[in-house]
Length: 220
Image 1 (cartoon, rainbow, N blue to C red):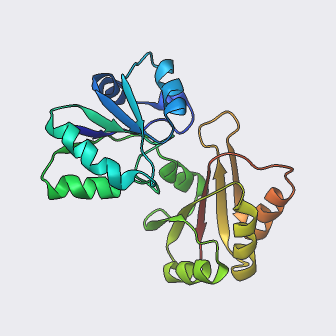
Image 2: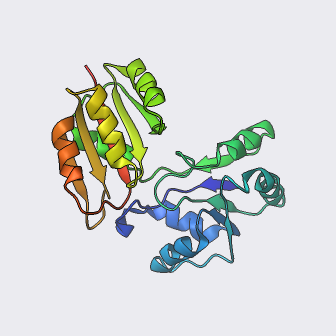
Image 3: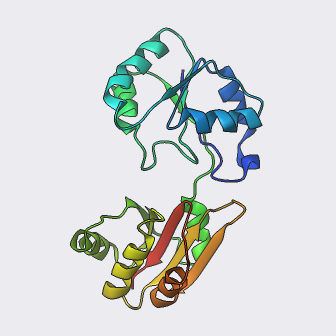
């Protein structure tokens, strides 16, 4: 059996009992960073004999290795560094192959920054769309966002790009309502909401910006 296993995005207590049970049953676990994943597993007193790196660079090669392991009746799983695997991470090609070969797999529910950030924002939740990581090019970014006026948009952003992205949003959407949620559920969780100018100035005033960032915004 193949398992897609979410892990905590910050607070280690957020893992589910079912996720821990599945992790203990695995023969092989694929992950982004074996060292980081092993540190997490030690916190739960879980030992897995084989941890293997799964990234966009080795994805094509590993797909058929994984399919072969499943056919040998091994329990195989995949995790990301934090949260739900395959969301803006490699892996969907593997799921596509499993479907093509009619191989069963299970997706476990669990932590993700997307919904907590949406709720924190106070913006409309009846319709929303996840845009992944926004384009680094202003014209492509604006062209994409213009398609979703009247719909709450959620995206990920790098701490190294956040100021540039906020600057582009401020320039093109001066009345934008936005929330930047950084390090959700972690010790240094930081949620900043308001109009785009206020949020931009807040981050512009920081000496350094670190951590996982989720942005939520709404254009009338």
